[in-house]
View 1: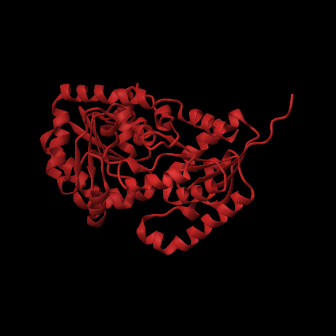
View 2 (view 1 turned 90 degrees about the horizontal axis):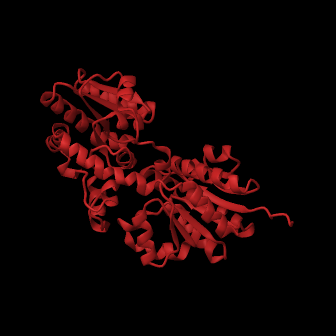
View 3 (view 1 turned 90 degrees about the vertical axis):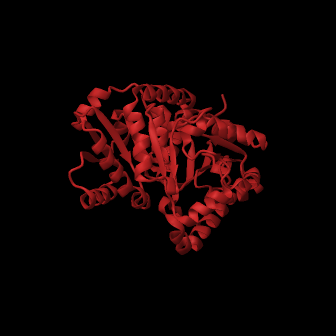
Length: 381
């Protein structure tokens, strides 16, 4: 039997979430092809599985427009050097993981030279900046999407696509013991509300004090209530603690590091910033209220280029929306308090919304990394 040739895969991930997806993808690829050589830009999780990083992942990570302005020349140089490397040493397939502003330009150069390209995690072209579809058509041999409606969008524009499901759905078990979770957090109140004002300091500045004011108002309406506020790292936790000390020190808010999924699963209702937390709450079938606040400049740009009705992913995944979305000037303490209290005061409503949200888990749990690995290796062959 002839020996299989080594499969060579180029890859670029530019932030922690991409490193997480990339590591799961590499693990699935290595299960099928232990000989696979994977080179490009990766994070520590991917490197631990044998991927070779030519540049630090942080070299292409950007935090805001100011950061981009100071590092743009360096980022462009890195992309040019990567393109030259892969053109001179062609991989069987190149996989760009998210970071579309970096990867789509690189993918376009490689595909022009006959290198097959896969883009993993769809840019939000279906939501705003729809003009990018033309660039995607040129750059991407095959798109891997996390959500089913994204695949429908690409089929409309004749972009080869596979909906693989969402890796977070593969990690979450919605059948949790709520009583035990609450006990582990030391919660004894009748109602528990999870507060997730965001993972970045900019989000905390926009929503942190607002969420504390909502908690204060809910305490005045409901005597038997507690709150839990999980944060990803010590810096954001300390910043929220500081806001809490300034606003009101005696609120029953447990501020914890990590454990965001456990906090959501233990809660009756989640009050959160639009983002991954909304998807996690949906996978646990938890009623939620979403707040969204950005700068006035970003707000104007979103209005100019957005073409979706809903900002929270759960509403985009359901035929009819069930998640209250309070955006910009609508995201006031009074409005958010009313929306959360409506769920707390109406068990029937909570159960109805929970039932509707529970369908999302089955939609997204598809063994995403394994499916993605199969597509990548098929294209490599």
